Length: 119
Image (cartoon, rainbow, N blue to C red):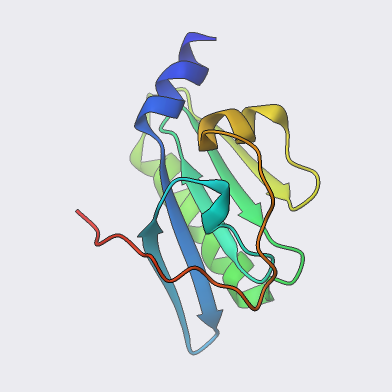
């Protein structure tokens, strides 16, 4: 329970989109409103980390997301990191808790434009 609460407090959401030529990864607002069915999102809660895969995400986005997930895990050697790959419509309750609440996901044609500059 403590790790879930700490994960929620520390969590950052990254949006991965594009094609094999270039898959971009950028930070977005940590809310269900940032999710869309056409892309992949990495919810980094430090202890609980999720790769969320939208129903219409492409293989390049998924592969880039898996690479980012592996990189985070390797970076945190010695920290007990629980990583989960979750598909849209099959999210565990812990995913919604760390994200800050459950809500509808945007269709793939409605990628959110309110990105936050990193760091």
